[in-house]
Length: 493
Image (cartoon, rainbow, N blue to C red):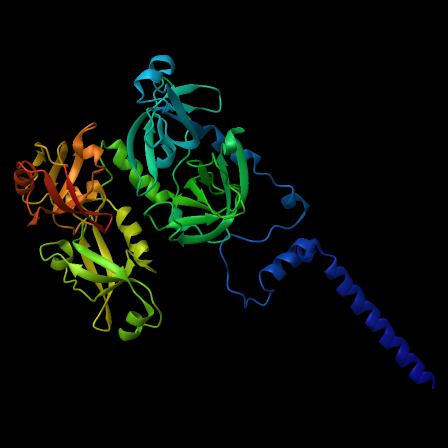
């Protein structure tokens, strides 16, 4: 019995010593995991190393991180976001206009100013401002106001309604604050962003949110189909303002919202900064219009039926529908029926994505396309050339007594088609300008209208249209194509 008692005491002593050593080792500072380390291990998937390392993005934790502020970021960037005021003088129609008696007493309608308000972003210290085209469209005067109270009259260097972008220039003897243009291709869904602008004219306002989606298409605000979607509050007046990332770089120009009431409901859209950069460089280079690289091919969407017939897992890419036999695509070996799957390594999910990728590339370079052809995927290098001028660049002014009198016309070429924003493979004779107050202006003809027929004759040259339009007749039958719609008219004039 006494031996068993001694054995039990010895065992207890050994356990106490071992426990003391373990307790001492557990209290060493170098091995204390702490609450933050425990949370870090949990967020990273545990300490066993089975989780895949992610990017430098994580959920914030700890009191210090929850008290972080965007204030330093706003302080560094807000001065480069400006207010844009556009005004146009319009004539108010008097109810007595046209009546010779009442016009003696009440006169004609007096002109009045119609103004619009938006935002813009200084992207160059020399005074280059980027905004939306719809903010300055048809304006007689555009003024830019900085956050420090200075105001400047600006000059429009370049604008494009298909992209809804415009570049303005203001001048000062001192450099302007700027926001650097970032890489919108580096964005990921979930990234934090700030939107800065002047909503409803209340003054400069900053809102925060995340990138909700990328490469949004068919939102109906322009022909461009590649937008950043964000839930940062964007309201009327924010148009043309900055969408910035956490590095203080411009990654988008706020452009549009989905709304039932006119106010923000958390669905806003911005033009990606890579498109903004390409457009700005064209404006700084003195371009008359935004020139896109020409590869000599037309594309159409890949439908589920087409994808199935080609043996594809799902619909993606851009289907080549036609190829110019003298263009870069033909020289690279591309053929109708091939599907473009990627552009310089970036996946092409739909046709609009290919249009976007092409538009952001400089003329004169090359691009590597991944193409599905005859069931096999291969890499093809294509030259990005300037659109050809065509056989004739003559612009002809139409006279006579026809409905076309006062219109200037020319034979369509790929380069002219780009300038007039019609498909580059379109053929025919197009109206390039209309004199104000002319018969053509009165009948509503517009630049970009393609004249197909006149008095039973097919129009294939500008000279032929001029000859027919100046004939001595009062009856006119013509066919005009506008935005893909055919309009036929017969009248006595």
